[in-house]
Amino acid sequence: MVPATIDGVEIYLGTGGYTNEDWVGLLYPLEAKKDQWLSIYARHFNAVELNSSFYNIPGLKAFAGMLKRSEGRVHWAVKIHQSMTHERKASDEDYRRLFESVAPLREAGVLGPFLAQFPQSFHRTPENRRYFAALAQRFADKTLAPGGLAVEFRHASWDNEEVREAFRKAGLTWVSTDYPPLPGLPKNQLHITSEIAYIRLSGRNKEKWYEGKDQAERHDYRYSEEELRFWVRSLQAALELEPPTQVWFIFNNTTKGHALVNLEMLRKLLEEAGLFP
Image (cartoon, rainbow, N blue to C red):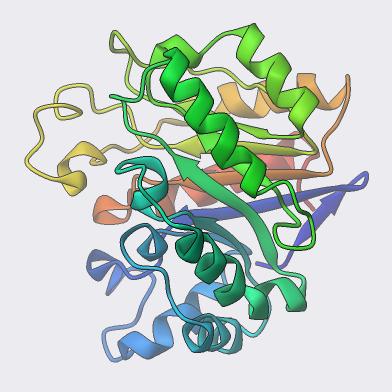
């Protein structure tokens, strides 16, 4: 898949991570080595959300290697380190290392937004609002973060128009999430607060969302065509008002290859709606 542009709007389709063992035999041939996976991935999808950076910030050489293996065909959303969103004790050095290490992607023009994914325990309190404002300010320099900061809140206390209006004024990207219908989670609804629309689909497995033994169980869910059509219709309506310059669809239901099936399903729905060439 190559970058797609419709009426000046760039459409990016991809998954959360690309090193999935259960894609062997589905996307990755049995004989393919792991260091070939990214090259294969880049032939099918034009975006990826890097998850490994949440656990350990890759070095400059690692990002240069990713750029080389993907042949510059993939745009990258980079999840920021857990010390910045979960532990909330990142140092100035941690931020400096993050901005410096992604230089190969930035210089090649394939660095998308940084992604801040906050845990559900991060409620909208005065203390957390102050912390978030300080964190967001670090990503305001477009020479370091050309795609800015995309933010996923997992607690419903942030899910209101007052917060989104503040996002619009600050140029922050609201991550529109697709979650199970459970109390305390934000609603599944498209909101665009910057030049980037970012839709993150994590599956609707409400039985395993809290009770699952691991992330694989939580995201063990395959969307139906009608569930995905909701997002296509929402995007159509948004494009008639004030269209963004980029639209990102990232699937995190990578378990058992669900995301691969759903990406193909979404692509066809976008084509039918005239939103993908």
